[in-house]
Image (cartoon, rainbow, N blue to C red; front, side):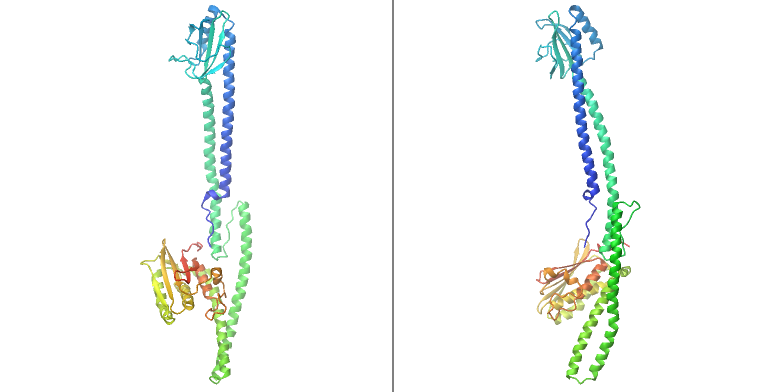
Length: 464
């Protein structure tokens, strides 16, 4: 069983909340910047129009040479390229000022209008782009054209836009850095919890979820789980202790009972009814003792301290030895027994005797249930740098609904089958696989029977 991988930070709740907050902050900052830009632009536009209107009312009081003098004095205080004027007679002929012709499209109605092209001239003293313009008629019938470049307005708004942009940028960058740092701490704690959980899933019930000094919600949840683990470990040890004690205590009287029955059998006449009955009773006693031995063997394999004796070993000689060992048994059952190995298999870390026992149980199971004339294959596979051991047969196979249950103690797929055994062989294999952190799988082989796979990836072994 594998646990979800929390390394993808985008899926964590803290990352999502921080990303959502950052997104909302950016959106609202953009809205704020747009509203401020719009309000400031509207205010400056109104201010420019109001200033132009004041100039219009001021110059409307003058006439003749006084108007020319007032305009000349005003231009000394105006900004070159921003404000300009032109004075024309009633026939629209140029009289005075930097503006030498009436801009195209300007109505002579005394109202302020916005023009996209203010003056078609190379003179740097004239507004080059859009401008606000007004045409007013003086007391002596002449036409006075006043223009103000909108570039000044745009310059102010650009300054405001720049300030808002840098303000938001300098806020977002620390926000992103803070988001990255804040999401790392919860993920680091989750990875620590995952490491402990994987050890617990692998069977080490002594492990507990780590706690920090912050005593936050995650620590509260970990403390609750640890309390549950304490209770579960206590109950499991009690059940295991009772089962082990029963198996251990009954083995001795069963051994004595069998010895007495054997002595009685030796004293009975050969072929008599008593001798036949005693043979049957001895067989039942042997069956009970075999079951108790299997239970004690599984209990022994569940002791995680055996991992301290693990060594690195080459699986190729191990599989060759298993093939040589079971080849006579397969030939006796009129089966074809093949060994399929690559040139090199990745080394394994484990107990050689236990791995021999595990694969031997798988082979024994396949040879037992494969009918004469069938085929059994022992195969070693190098899959991406890890070893996979497969046992395939042409027997009846294992139904898909029973593939999880076959590893339970005393489970037998067919209770009426004389070859069904005690239901402990695959349980022992499962215990050995769990001890090593290997994955044990059941499927259908290309021969039509069962496919038993020992995936030696060692992904669930807790770090020591």
